[in-house]
Amino acid sequence: MNLKTEIRYISQQNLEDYKKYLSMDNMENMRRQSYHGMVLHTEAEEPVQAILIWNDWNYLKTETGEVERNAEIIEFQADQPENGKQLLEAFLQEAEKVGIVRTQFRLPLDWEDARVPMLKASGFQLEEQENNQMVITVEELTALPIAKKELLIQDVISMGEVNMQQFRKAMMTCTQSSITEMPRDLMALPLSWFEPDISSCIKTEGKVRGLFLIHRTGSGVLETQLLCGFDQTNNMGILHMIVHSIQKIQKKYPPDTFIRIRWNRQQTKHLAQKMLNRKMGDMVIVAER
Image 1 (cartoon, rainbow, N blue to C red):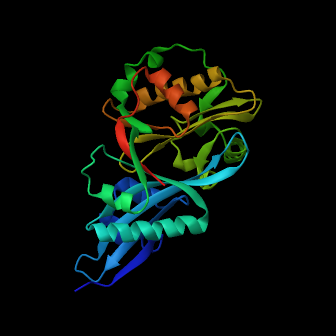
Image 2: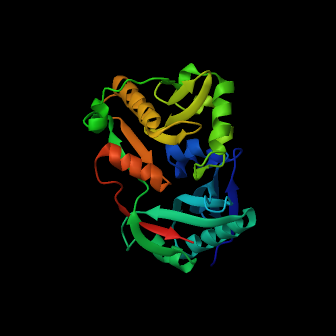
């Protein structure tokens, strides 16, 4: 007998109901405006048969100035192929409704993964690509050449030394700069979301002119959130912010602390590759539609 199914959205009001299905970090992220979730319910004893979490961001086409809304699926699990396909179709309908033009999902490099045929059946194109993130430890970071640089860090301070008004003005300027990808809820995030002593900024003449923001996730991972320089900020200024944060991290966190470095832009990837002096992310399967 076929069980009756129902698609439900995850909201702030029912988030706790899905706690056992979500990681600690996804639980935390679901409180952000740019993260969304939906589940497939049935009348079975274990009602949740499939779950999908995604976030969205604005993508600025530098050649035309047009802003697109893109999405990345962060989590997708289903107990049966038909349930997974049903939930994917519900998500794609929602994505079309809100104006999302491109969706990506990265999963481990395993073509036998049960989700692969579900994604193909829903129109996703799959191929092997380099991941858009990597994880290193504080110990590995300390061993890198950049961590040993003795730069005269002028005008670079920790984010904890700026007030909310200066922070908001800097965030506004960043959203209007040439950066091509950023979370849609960037302006809604409180200053407290970012670690005040290891996040850094460039401040001259009372104005913040660059940001390097780091968040400590619920699971204790340090995750890069935003790297942005504007006005007359040059590459050396950006390097100074990064070195400043590295030095603070080394002093505060134990060697086995994980640091997750993410990049959506080629510019950020190339900078990370140069600084880390190593091969970037592992190969993964990227599903795109």
